[in-house]
Length: 247
Ligand code: IP8
Image (cartoon, rainbow, N blue to C red):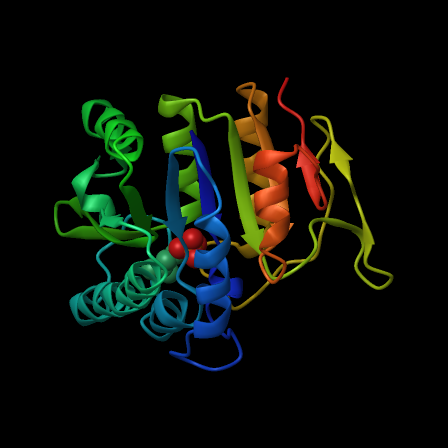
């Protein structure tokens, strides 16, 4: 099984609120069609979920956030999710929409439900889940990042490969020269922070990728604008991006 995160920066235009990059999403779907093994998709919030989370000052900490914000963030994620599902359907994939409420209780994954995701993927359907605003309990809510979902799913499902599709070639050792790091073995590179992202942008991704690779799985950061690189990584094990080697 292959676990793939479609980052918000690749599926939406982060400069413009509520704008999906439909052509890019279609191209990603076309490439995913070429993968012959079970896949599970997680997608981020980009200029949908993050736009509203910033407006309503909502974060990953469990708190009593404005309920209007909770409702609006959730609604915007459904809207973005629908765009992804429609694109998958149009490109002859069979997506199976799974909001995180289907396998999370509070801030914990429900193991039995997560294991079911693997069976769904093995049937040929493609489970599609996403970062979201979630109920925590005692009138508290929180923003669950799709990156965190990747770690939860990886821990239980032990995919052959975890892929993060980004709007960059991978992790750069130097942001100015964009010198790509091809492989990381446990060490964590320091990078500058993205302020518009309530869940922590690239820093969060690197943190989750390190956690997953420490559990023994390979994690691959790839440019989602070049979706054939995803297919190559899955099929030929040729990696044009940054590989976090599992230990
Ligand atoms: O973009 C967060 O998911 P992420 C989604 O994967 C929301 O961090 C609702 C902001």
